[in-house]
Image 1 (cartoon, rainbow, N blue to C red):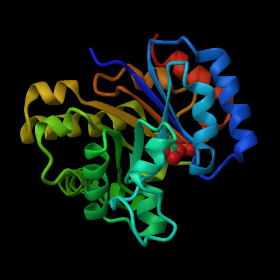
Image 2: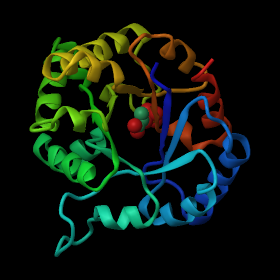
Image 3: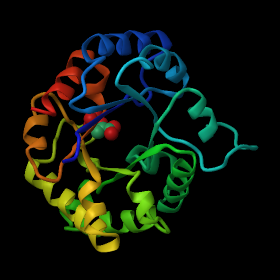
Length: 252
Ligand code: PEP
């Protein structure tokens, strides 16, 4: 039985004060909730302050990215040690906005996952197709390429520490959610892919999250699908009531 995981990606939202206000509201409602694993991923600037508030709760901290070098002349980047210092246990890697706006390739994603694992983080590895790719029936091909590239040279013991998030790009921030059936088709493909490249026990333990306009109203139907184990939530994670409802609705 895979425990649901709900992660909130706050993207480039929330100053430190705003982040503290949001996470304090989440803490009031979710501090002892244990039917799902809960992760919040604030911007780098608020990590430390958010961590102070959640450290005595079940809510875990994640970063929205990390760089694959440990230190050096890489202006503007943030190292694994830096986010670990702030209390992060998770890191989102390969988000479609990183791929689209910052030119992150499958090779870079692979290096980031490798470093994240070496440093003891749980990577939340994102894959997903664009609308054009879906309309041209390329969804499975695209996911296959992203899995091959992102997971190159990974061993079974690495896969056991990774969470995969399927996020169709056309559903992110658009209000258009993939239907539970559309999402399940790709989740099933990902689980089979892991089974073929690793083992069935590894595949059965892997948590695969869905991301793309998840709300309190659609999480239940998504979670009814056999291969959907939780959600990576963008917009709705910026509102305490909405995120709390998503977490609570994910497990009943
Ligand atoms: C995301 O950013 O990962 C995401 C899924 O965003 P939204 O929920 O706003 O579509």
